[in-house]
Image 1 (cartoon, rainbow, N blue to C red):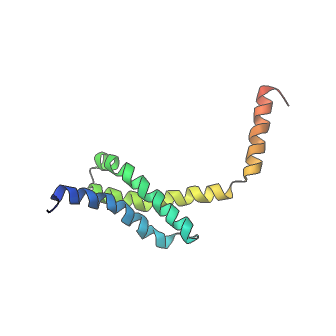
Image 2 (cartoon, rainbow, N blue to C red):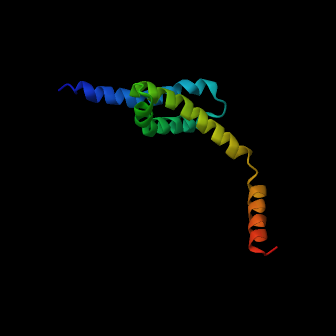
Image 3 (tube, rainbow, N blue to C red):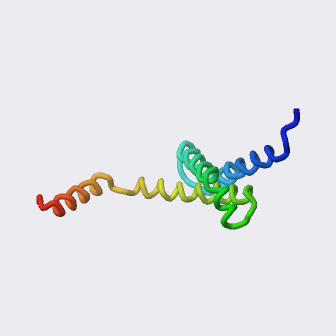
Length: 106
C-alpha cells in the first residue's frame, strides 16, 4: 500500500529541520556529543516552530523547517557557550547577596 502524498510531504517538511541542523554541524566547534546534542536542539526548535513560522512568513513549511534547524542549532550553540562561560559559584553568591540586601539581612 502506497502512503498518500500528503503524508510524505509532511514527513519531508519535518525532516527538513533535521537536515538543516545536520548542515550546520560542519560549522560548529566542540566534541561530537556536544555537536549532536546541539543538532537535536536545532531539530526540536524546527519541529515546533516551523508550522508557526511558515504561517507568519508564508514560506513553505519545508524551507522554514530547514532554516529553523540551521539557525536553531546556532542558537543552541550560543546558549551552550554562555552556560559554559558563566561562573556558577560567583553568580549564586551575587544572587544570594542581592537577596539578603533586599530582605534587609545583610
